Image (cartoon, rainbow, N blue to C red; front, top):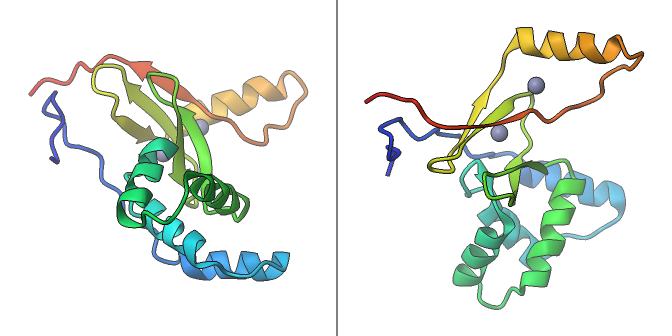
Length: 156
Ligand SMILES: [Zn+2]
Ligand SMILES: [Zn+2]
């Protein structure tokens, strides 16, 4: 379970614990009320692996709460994105969009083409080089998504 086919350890993540507070503050500021189904979707979403696709979230929500429709899951995910709790983070090796819990601090991704696992990395040198490159084009970089699709060369 915690080891990948290549023998590498599966990346771990710590679940976001303060989402209820952030969500309720966002809803209040937007004049929305809390809804039970949305809270249930959020609860399941924050228990997902760190990078997940919406299809598996729908399946898991419907397994636990059969009364919640896929449309409600999609709508709830949009609200969670608007609240800054989730974001569309990258496409996996088969082109499927993955969502990720929004944490402080920036990271980029390596996608293993062999097993599909997502790894995170941060390289200050790379970040600086990217910023320098866009500055030379007279831009001030606001954000970027840097995804590398790679074959695993890990030796057990
Ligand atoms: Zn980066
Ligand atoms: Zn990530």
